[in-house]
Length: 290
Ligand SMILES: [Cu+2]
Image (cartoon, rainbow, N blue to C red):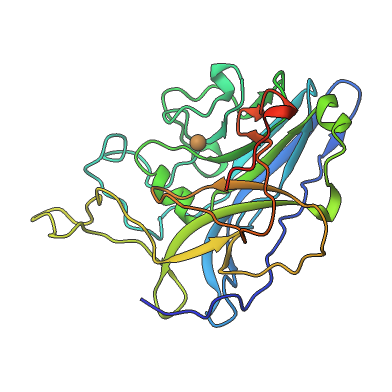
């Protein structure tokens, strides 16, 4: 594994996705999953990633409560995976190697738009899984404001697709949130925390075998894998220059299995005001939680 200097690169803020159109009735987006090369640390060569709109993390999708959002998710990925696919797992034995489907985590949606693992599709929808029924997903956004995220969900390879970079924020807003007058614009910062490991050439490392290896099966799934490097918004150990004022952070653990204990300077008051289910019930219950 490589050792990388901490706090060398500034924190990237993922851009907000622009819709193809927005009118009184609905908002329509197209999101393409594409391979790209991205610098994840300034001491590393560019890393091959798979990202929504070719970026890791994907662009931020912003929605208002009750806005009818339609998204056509498109797979523009290669036929071969660049991470080790265990062909003994459920859903991977026959059929195409690279399959994708998008789940909006925490969203209330109809089953056809939920991104079932078996509703996968390949490049240009050439092949589809048994639960695939539509190209355009419908998000009614009939729930309170929350920090949601979208990520890959394909049967048997979710861990690999998400590790490759297929994850992004979906921020749902409502009138209650507006009334709260929270920090916004450049003072509202999403933080997607994920672990990765790198090979010296900058490529992502994902183990092809557990330890000890499974005889006769290669690659084989590992019972769990935690990377040795932590990234925020797709950058290794970044820093953020801040002003002495109030900020709003939206903190998301988008790791496959790693748990985190997030700490702030004890001098700084921190209030948890929400979860991925929405705002905490009462403002009076917003407690300092770190
Ligand atoms: Cu999820």
